[in-house]
Image 1 (cartoon, rainbow, N blue to C red):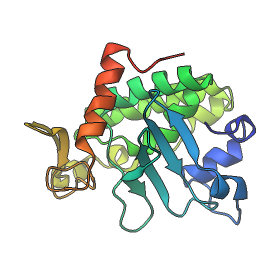
Image 2: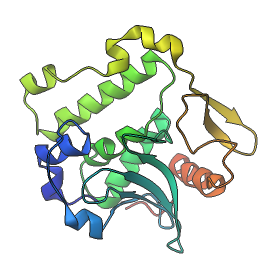
Image 3: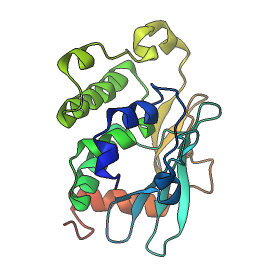
Length: 211
C-alpha cells in the first residue's frame, strides 16, 4: 500500500491527480509500485513511475504475473476499468487487508472508474470528495472551492459522449463505445477476464482470507 507519509501529503495528491504540474520525482515509487491486496491470491498493482507521466494499473496473480488492465497518461489514456460499485467494494477490501484508511485506496483508484452518465459521474465525484473530507487533509474552504469536473461544468459535452457499460456472456461487464477508453472490452483478447471476474466474485462472497 502507499507509504503513509506520502498519503498524508497534500502535494503528493495534487501531483498524482495532475492538479499540480511541477518538477518532482518519487524514486521510491519507481522502485516499488503500490500494491493493493485484494485476496490471498490476487492484488492490484499501481505503477506510477517516479513522475506520474504514465500511471499503470495491473492485476497480479498468485504466481506474481502482472497483466496491465488500465493506464492513464495525458495522450492515449485507457483508464476506465472499474464500475463504481466495484471501486467501492475494492477500496473497502484493500483498505481492510492493508490496515489503512479507506480514503487512501479510494483516491488512488478513482481515476480508473468509468462513467456513462452525468448522474454516475456526479456520484463518483461526490464519493471522491467524501474521501478527501475523511482524509482530514483539506479544509472546508478548500473542498468548497474544488474545481468542477469539465464534463459536469459543460453539460452539452454529454451529447457527444459514447461510452456504455454492458454485461456480455463469457465476459461479464465490459466498457464499450467510441469513448470507452478501456482495456476491459470483449474485443481485447489480452484482458484477464477469468481472473478478474474471480476476484470480483471473492468480493461478493467475502472470500480471500480477509484480515
